[in-house]
Length: 367
Ligand SMILES: Nc1ncnc2c1ncn2[C@@H]1O[C@H](COP(=O)(O)OP(=O)(O)OP(=O)(O)O)[C@@H](O)[C@H]1O
Image (cartoon, rainbow, N blue to C red; front, side, top):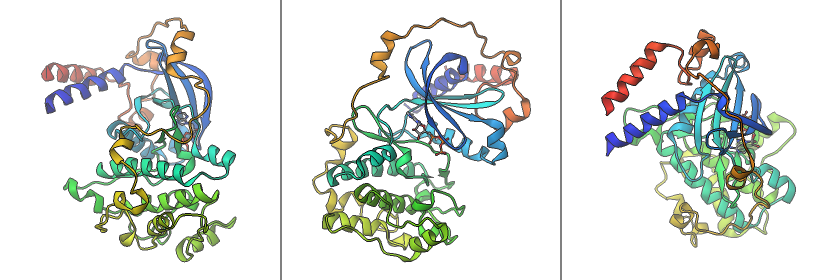
């Protein structure tokens, strides 16, 4: 069984290595991040629709983002969940890094909140529980997400949500896999409104920071604004460290309790912390939720985006493409800069023929 999975994973790796920008037709821009753009693309061979995130290598090197790009790739490749964006492939050329992912056409929670101002408690519960399942999968793999916020949560055509953007995630290393959830790191990062107090205070922190951000997100989805806000960053930091959240009396007492437990300033006492014996699934607010049913996406979401533009099924029949000839493993054609190429190690294609031969040999050995 283990060998079978290894074989499949290896075949997938080799398949990814054969992909390049040429395999995809750019259709339109769907998003813009700090370091690059995200496009709607169509794979020529299969005619399937994907989202392609394109990052500029020089810019990433200049802004010291190389480690983040490599982490994003590792997370996308390793961590699979119904609530995390599905990764198709990633590769590079001379100037750019490409991430090809499934395309979600329902927009993000930031835009939805801007339009609707706030969500019903039922809808908030549905999103919160889906995020808990995504975070638990990440934590199980020894990763902290560190960037939970409405902009990074996309809605699919059925109304279910998925996390995107793993550039700020951190993979914790531990020899003992069962202990990774207790591991800590120290770098200060994240979006100010969502940063946990222990991060601001420069303390070592762990997976609890994601539960803090979940508390902020739940609050924002119910009130239309985050609990600790100021135009002045330093005032905002102070509020995060010292203030208690002011929760509207229209919020149910169970939900108020969930928010307060997630926004516990002491990470070890925070709901979701590995030091807490209480399982977040057992919180009274989730009493009527069937977690397995949610995992299997058998609930009918309250909000379903209108229209299925660029749904794969529709698009396949509408688009036709000319086949372009390509020699994907020809280094001259790819015109790779060896140093930059090595900087982003792990991203295919590989220019070195010896490496290709080694891989072919490896496949033979697996068979
Ligand atoms: N898989 C996807 N399907 C549809 N739209 C997407 C997808 N991935 C990203 N987008 C859109 O592109 C935007 C930017 O994506 P993303 O946050 O991954 O980029 P980034 O450069 O890492 O951004 P950031 O500045 O937050 O680090 C998202 O807010 C979203 O609107």
